[in-house]
Image (tube, rainbow, N blue to C red; front, side, top):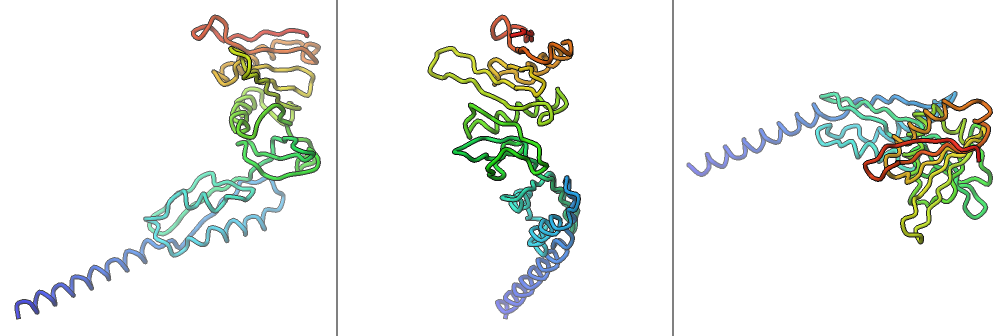
Length: 248
């Protein structure tokens, strides 16, 4: 009899625990997924529908165990990237996605490979023409493995100079690993004719870009039509970052 009472109590406990799990599951099941799109499309209705459908797979899942990485994966392979996601308990998820814009072009075997501002591949084309009809910034001397690093430096350039595609025609990397002590040089070939050069571009790139921009602003309109502004560190590792202009 004693064992029977224990068995009944155990069964009641299990039933209560199961009921609790079910209730919690229903309370915290995802019911609402709100999507905000940052896009440059005039009509984004179809893109919004596609993104919404991709995210709807999470409806009914527990918000407690839903990870941001799961949501980010839904955008893999598309022209959008998840910019942010926020859980609003008990049952709502707010997601912001932004359009991946073509910025860079790399010529490979007669085709152009297009990359976004983060240096991630988007598409291939027979000509260097963005979806808006204007050319992308062509990358030369840069391997596929280096594109994301160069894209990061280019983003710093854009922040200082106030533009990238509109003012830069191409970006070139002069790297000579076979020459000991050679300083890799990253050059921004501007549409106005001027060249911005960063010596040893992997080190203190932001500061060197700031220095070159200040020098750029000091140039006359005639000087901006040609020549080179060079950003570099003078005086060794602990020296000052400087920028100078040469007409040649």
